[in-house]
View (cartoon, each protein chain N blue to C red):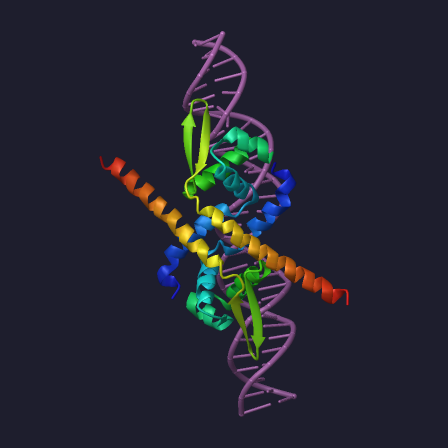
Amino acid sequence: MFQEHKKHFEARAKVLKAMAHPSRLFIIEELEKGERCVCELTEMIGVDVSTISKHLSTLKQAGIVADDKRGNQVFYQLRVPCILNFFDCVESVLELQAQDHAAVLAVVSK
Amino acid sequence: MFQEHKKHFEARAKVLKAMAHPSRLFIIEELEKGERCVCELTEMIGVDVSTISKHLSTLKQAGIVADDKRGNQVFYQLRVPCILNFFDCVESVLELQAQDHAAVLAVVSK
DNA sequence: CAATTACATGGCTATATTGCCAAATACGCA
DNA sequence: TGCGTATTTGGCAATATAGCCATGTAATTG
């Protein structure tokens, strides 16, 4: 049931895993607006360049972004616009979480 | 730019992280068809019950599934149907990957 | 109440991830 | 050619994750 399609689920999990990091989510959202070079992303996120470079490498390896070297710098862009649909759904999960939390608080404060 | 919304990105990343595992993806897909008890999922996936139980706990904590104890067993169900939209997009990423791979092969075999 | 079934939890080990620093590489320019 | 800038890569330490086994707990059955 699962074992036969294991490879398939692993492949999909890899893509999700590549997205499942705060900085990488930010990068995806930012790239939606247009291509950005590594230095721009580094500046916006505020961690070491090498760290950002590795995040970008992760996203690239997952097939989510593409890189384009122009002159001195490397520009990254989204390859898969539909990624953005994810966010609405993730938001709805977060809303549910918030509701849960509120419910718990209501019980506690009774 | 990023630091101000860090918490927000972390929250979203948590949800994605909860999905980013082969077994958990399988569980989500399976639950789309209807609720399942832990024993059914365990049987289908073929690893230790305790492992499945922890996966379900992860999904529950992320707000993706809900549990319902009835008698001896615990049934899990999807709380967020939209999760399924993810898969189409993930598939499209995988297709891109396949294209990339084919392109590399074409170059190599030249 | 004892035994069984279904889950959950704690503990442990192996492995993966993250982020920093340092070093290597690539490019443009004087 | 030599320098400065942009980016990638290797190495390392800290932390997180996955899965197994053993154990604990709750409900069912006899």
